[in-house]
Length: 278
Image (cartoon, rainbow, N blue to C red; front, side, top):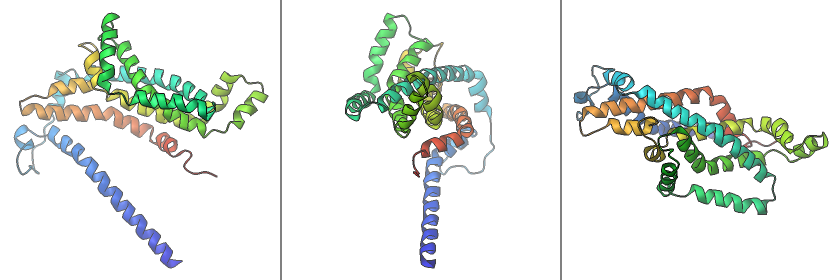
């Protein structure tokens, strides 16, 4: 018994050390970008790197006040929120319907959605650009939102499908016996149970749309340019622009970090739901 407990403690210690090393490796680029954003170019690109330096927030000031960062951030938030508000409800309805279909009928549809998600974005960006030009919708929020919904919808459906499968069908039958129609069953009985899954689907849909670069580059213009496209234009051949790009990278990360902190409890619950049965 004592030997087993010692082995368990050793395994847990090794796991913690491994996770700590993995986390540190993943944080190195972020730490490097944060340091670059508060360094002067002369300090940022010295070899070996300068450890002691006089920090400056001039590049953060330039990003936020001289480069219209707030306007690009607002554009990204509008597009991301619009994508979530359209994608999650439609994806949830589709996933619920598929989860209540026989497996042999649902599998071809799910496979088709998975195939669509595998298409290269460039293959889909050109038709969206042609369609947007024909409808005179280039550089508008609705076009970019609809495009992002189209490419991210398969992911949302697949994600919600797994959550709805974990909800027993007996609840549907019990609701029907109580007089609920299909819509009432979905809204009153199923959705509250799938709330952790909705949180996860909304968060991932937000991340995918917030970080989208190619579609935003092709379908936006001066009015609706989003942060990823704007930050790509900050850099240049001038070394001093690299500190501005680093400051922009830190700025674009802050809203997502705040969202993750706010929904962390719901996210962990949603990711672990169904992991423990009993």
